[in-house]
Length: 92
Image (cartoon, rainbow, N blue to C red; front, side, top):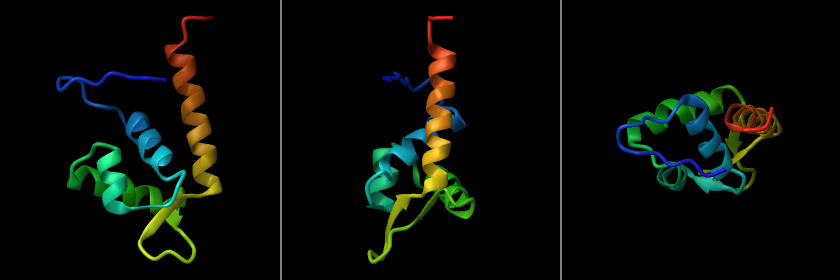
């Protein structure tokens, strides 16, 4: 689902979390995750380390410095996508 984000509209926690989790569907280093999620360093660190601490993202086995979504993270991503569909769906 495409969302347009203007400078005036700040993204919500669920939107940013979905973007970070989607980037980590493939192993990526922190810098790549930060750029692909379009976050500044401070905001990225706040979100990223919270997601790591809660077990949604983990360092990818055998690849130092690269991170990937965990099974727990996939569950969160699915829940957030479903919630987004419910919130923005015109069918009810």
